[in-house]
Every structure is written in C-alpha cells, then in structure tokens.
Image 1: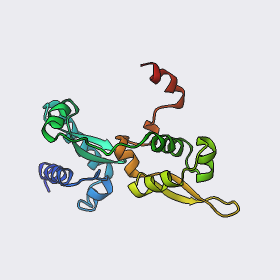
Image 2: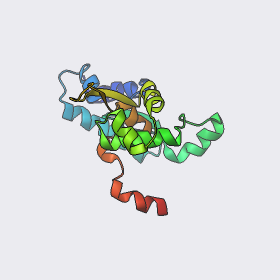
Image 3: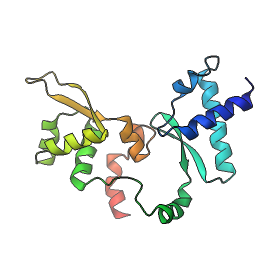
Length: 177
C-alpha cells in the first residue's frame, strides 16, 4: 500500500476514535509496518496539522495519539456549545486524586491518614469515573486494595505519561503565579 494511502487510513482512524489511538492498534491493520514507521507517519501527520494552522491538532496523550481541536480556538467552541468540556472534580476529589497519582500504589487507609478524613465515597466515585483503578492488593493483614491512576486519568488531564505530572517541588512556585 502506498504511504499516502497509509497516511489517509491513519488519519481516518484518528478522526473516528474517541480515545487515543495506540500504535499497536494501527499495527494490527498494517502488520508489515514497524512501530517506528507508524510513529513516524503519525508525527508527519501531526506536523502537517500544526504547520498548516488547521483547527485540528494531533496530540500524543495517554500512550496514544488523538485528534483534538486547536487550543487557540477554545473560546469559539465554548461560545458555540455553551457547556464545559469536562465534568469538574470537587476539591476533596482532586486532593484524593493527587495523593493517588503521586503515591501510587496506595491503599484507602494510607490516603485517609494523609487527608485526615474518610475517603471511601471519594475513592469509589473516582473509580466509577474510571480515573483510578485497583492495581493489586497489599501483602498485609486484610489484603487491602491498592489504587493507582488509569489511562483515563492521563486523558482527563491531557498527560502523555505520569512523568508529565508537575513535580512536587514546583508546587510553591505555582501558587505564587
């Protein structure tokens, strides 16, 4: 298959997917292509969209690639749809989520000892939203669940990986700004 046609197929896949598209998913259609070749084609499409100042961008998020609207057009989209893009999380939910993101894998008891309040409801809600998940059990009496973030966490916050989380040392600087 000519490279131009492969590029068109990948672009159509990106457009039709509501979740980030993984290189492995693309490879299932093009077994003769190496992951590095697929990444190269994705980067080429990404570059084309960026350089042509289109309303759509290709971004790498949560280990895959996704088509998104250009950030500079957000005001127009908000005005058009008159709705918020994402469900807002409460401050207690964000605090709990931050503990999980930075300390994972972590038990409810560990979260509660840091926050100083019961977190059963919040943890269950975050789990129901798919932002966190059970990643195992602690080898301790009662074998409590261990919680960690999910791919949906990365998608929700637009992160490529957990390494993109702000460093804890930078938090005091962020508050001043």
